[in-house]
Image (cartoon, rainbow, N blue to C red; front, side, top):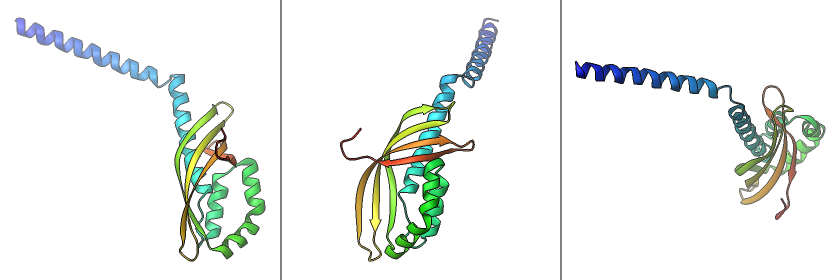
Length: 166
């Protein structure tokens, strides 16, 4: 009898714990802080991806790289890329240089999810390979403006930062 009561008490306590855990989990799904953290994480991931894209170039398929640049941008930056695309393509095809960028670190410096805007800073390692096969590595720093387009975050601006700034 005593053992039966102990098992019944353990069962009741386990059911109460499961109920409390489910209730707590359900409340966190509507939490504003959690939603802000999700928005921040998504914006930062998109900033990293797009900054890497805009610093990469396939010297063998310049037009595809320029399309990727345009797809990563929005607003004034996208307009600029479209306006200069043909001239840039001619120069880049003639040079034949390829670059592969890796964002080594990035952070959001501002986020207004309601307005759909954000700012990010990033450090980028760019591996440059000339047509001759000679390769070098460069390190750069950028500040990027982001805009939420309804489907994802895109870069609205990208500015190179001088060493020692910000």
